[in-house]
Length: 265
Image 1 (cartoon, rainbow, N blue to C red):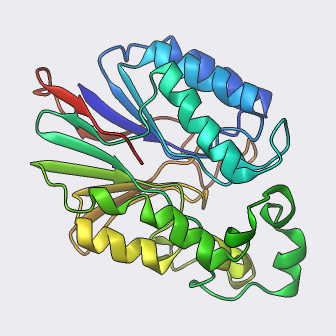
Image 2 (cartoon, rainbow, N blue to C red):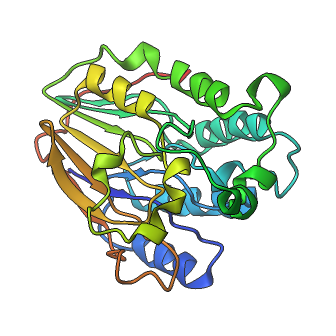
């Protein structure tokens, strides 16, 4: 059994959706796929994609991204949509909680951004669609409170251990995973990439591997004894920063016997 990762599928684009369809027809029936968020803002497309991936992989592990929580379809509240997606995944057999596969544990980590990476300027406030497409109940209107809410869902899993621990999130746990050569004008989006508090949780968990998405900048680096992987499929035009293929996270041929699951909340 091999464990692969991908994020930011953005199947709203037909060419991305076609790639997913071809992927499901490949030889991965005994493998695991980690999907680190941003499949589609349309619930119907998201369901279709997860169903397709589940038909091609033994396990599909999923955590929603910001696009997945846009209220562009039948939902008025992003938190309501988040809860509905958990129910949808349960119905499809897609993993949203901790998945134990013998000596390997796969742990989803929820988060949001709290501007701990920087304060958004006026341009970002106007241009970043989350500020218009996500709608949260009154206690969670503030980004810091929203991040705190999602991070609280992770607390029960931060003491878990195994021979190999693989965690994954949509958002970035710290900015050190971004390449130093990113141009200054491209760094305007840094405030909405993630949260230092997610990084603090990661230091407590100390996984062997952490998979993340959101930035669309593919990486496979080691920092502080953790291997960080971003394998965003990204938008069709983003060939230079995206691999446009699955990325092998872990070869786990010996994982064949015991499996167990835990709820994510």
